[in-house]
Image 1 (cartoon, rainbow, N blue to C red):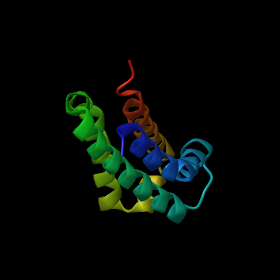
Image 2: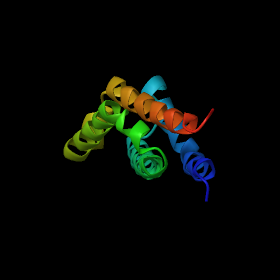
Image 3: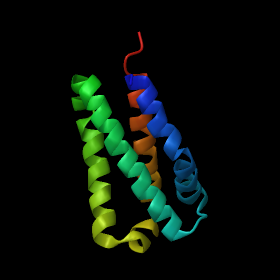
Image 4: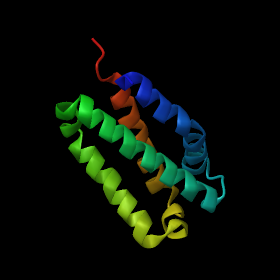
Length: 113
């Protein structure tokens, strides 16, 4: 399967989850448990997309290291603190959502002339 098609399948699979994350982060609405489930689905999708990017564009992915390190750091905070404690801080969660969104946009832009 070609890079762009596989990437778009990953992204299309999590669009509803991004909607939930955005409503929570920027509108303050949503169920914390549902937000937690969406968080992990988007994170898992980002790992799959990162692996795909790494195979097709390893140098470009290396240039993204700082942003990815922040995403990993947030994942560790969620794992250690649990969803209620982390999700109480919607601005932190909004930052995470924006960074993952930026990663997916970056991945879509690769290979364009």
